[in-house]
Amino acid sequence: MAYTSSLHLHKHLLLPKTHCRKPAPSFIPVAKINGVNGHSKKAHINGEGGGKKGVNGKKVNGGEKAHINGRDRIHLSVSTGGAGGQDGFGLRVAFQGAPGAYSEFAAKTALPGCDTVPCRAFADALAAVDGGAVDRAVLPVESTMEGTALRNYDLLLRHDLVVVQEINLFVHYCLLAMPGVRAAEVRRVISHPMALAHCGRALARLGVDREPVEDTAGAVEMLRSNRMLDTAAIASPRAADLYGLDVLAHGLQDESWNVTRFLLLSKPPSPVTLPMDADAKTSMVVAHRGGSMMVVLKVLSAFSSRNINLTKLEVINNNDGGGGGAAGTPVMILDTNARGAPTLRAFPHVLYVDCEGASHDPRVLDAIKEIERFAVFVRVLGCYAADSNVYDLQ
Image (cartoon, rainbow, N blue to C red):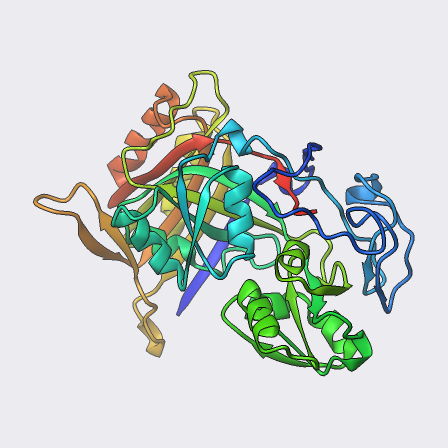
C-alpha cells in the first residue's frame, strides 16, 4: 500500500501579500462585465451578494464580488514586472494546455514578455526544455485544495532540470458560455477533472451534467470552435476575454482560498543568479530504503539544529507489499551524478523538502551533508528566489 503525508508551512497561504500594480502588458486585458474590470455586481448562484471581506475578515482590494454557495469571494491584484523581478523578453516558456490555460498565465506573470508555447502534456513541456526547443517550462506542483495530487514532482524527478523560480497563482473559476447563452439554457459543463471537482457544490446546485476534458482552456476552445449553445465551460476570466465568451458566474470554486503553486524549470546550470542577500529557497529530494519515521526525524534535526525553517516536507511511502498488500509504485529519480551517464533509480521511500536559504549558504550546505550521511540518495532540485506573494488574474 502506498501513502503520502505532507507538512506544508507556506506562510503565504495563510497571510497573503497582495501585489497592487497594473496587469502586465503581455496579458490580454481583463474582460469588463457589467462594469469596470470585474468590480461591479456579478452573477449569483444560491448566494447573496455584497460582501467585501477577504481572508480572516480583512478587506481585499475591491467592491462587491461574485458569490457562489453563499460565501464571500476573494479578489487580489496581479503584479507586473515579473515575480522575483525577472524579465521574460526573449524567453520561450512551455506550458501544458491550450492558450488561456492557468499555466500560461502563471508563466506570463512570472516572466512578463515571454513567448509561451502550448504542449499537449506536462511531459511534452519538460521534453521541450530538455531538447532545447524552449528556455523554460512551467509546472503546477501543488494547490491548497488538492495538495500535491498532481504528482508533477514525480515527473520533475525523471528529468535533468533545475527549479529556477516559483509563482503562486490564485485560481478564480468562472462559468463561461457562448455569447447570448443564459445560465438557464446550460445543460452540461466541461472542464479539467480537477476544476469540475473544485466546483462540485456549485455545479450540483445548477443541476448540470459534467464532462471532463484535458484542460480548462481546452474546454473553452472546444466550446467556441463547436459553438455549443447548451454547454458551458469552467475556466479563468481571462480565457473568456481571449475566446470572446460570456461570463455567467464568477467564483465558482467551492473553497474561496484556492491557490496553486507553479515551478519554472530550466536546463542546468541555473541561468538565474541570486544576490547574496536575497531571500532564497532550496528544494531537494531525499530517498531511502526503510525506517521512514527515523529518516524524517533525522532530516528535521539536520535543519532545526541549524535554525533553518522548512516550508515543505512531504513523505512518500510505498511499502513492499507485506501482509498480502500490493506493493506501491516506486518513485523514479534521475541520478544526475551517476557514473557514465544519468541513470533512473527506483526508491520506495522519498521525502520532498523545501527549506529557507540558498543552497550555497554554509548552514544549508552543512545540513545537506549531514543528510547525505544517512540517506541513500539526495538530489538538490534547485535554488531560487522565495516569492511569498499570491498573484491573481483579475
